[in-house]
Image (cartoon, rainbow, N blue to C red; front, side, top):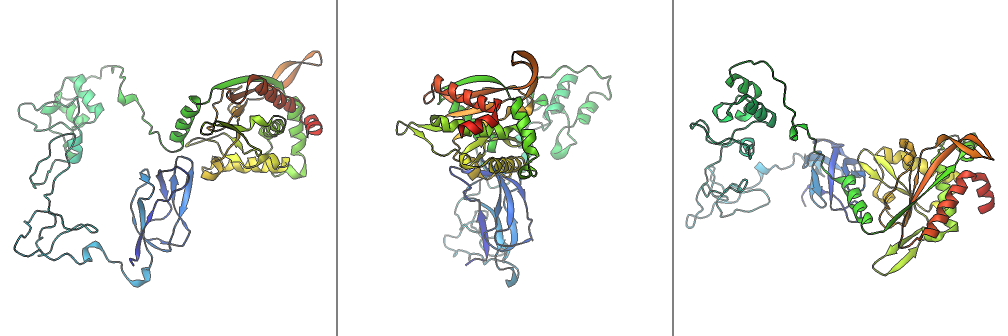
Length: 462
């Protein structure tokens, strides 16, 4: 059995087929222990650290940070028996013997004899009786000759619709120059094909164009450009890609309805101030989100149909007797919605602790895929961005989501007089296949009533 083992990218969650290498936690030559984290990978659900399957020494890293790798593809090689001496290299492997003279393979053919009298093969493959060919580039017919193509790869790729044709026989191929240099040449009326580039791989530089134009010129006001020189392209992948796919699927599958309710939450603000003085809550972050979450959980008990999902496969509405409460969290890699499992069974202290851990884990980018699966009902706290409210889109498979807006000091009629009160606006989006206007309105009304008087609601409703 080979002592060099290749570790493949594992399946990190349901339906995941690829992951992006974010960073390596080890380098070639490092000794690793069993289950030691060796690489950080971002999937469509989260960024996770992957542990080593074997102890040993890292001999090769097969993919650099930023590369996207398919599940099951090798990513690193580990020597599992480094004490046995140097690992065999490809050069030291026994080569295949030369074929007999009759029917011998012509030199220059893959699998043919090399100057040392042996057959050159690629490790892990066998001799192939085929002529070496370059892969056609950009639709150009391939050549059957074995002569190497010495055109620099970058130069071969540099052509495009605006690449000039050869002029006066000075250049046999497209000019290698960056887009800003091409624009500079056009502005000065300089033909790039007449310039011998002094940049990398013979590319034409701005200085080359300036020289060809006759030396320094008085700078003219630059014309406003509306092209790629003033554009930024961001690859859509990982968490952002999955979020986009889910939101499109949800928006065009579930008929959304959104209702709004503005409420006086002055008593909730005062209740939070008292709660922070309690010994059980000294070590926790107690925010308005805690009472909003508790309000949703209490209201679900009064209206269980809110916590359900639509099954198109069986033509059923599935009402959940547990609440996996999702909390939308904005991260550097995009929006994620981890959830607190069975949140309805938690005490207020346990709920505060669970929300604190969930938020901190999300901010650090360490939310495991399991925490983002199985959500039944969600809250998005847009108030932390100073936003009054919004019309949130349902996470796939959920029937309702509550947007919790910013709390503002606002003139409000209180006990028949205008007072400055703490006011917020709630928005509830729901799946109209399951939740009709009456049910959605009653649920939103109860959430608002709880936030208007949380202590009274806890005493009378629970």
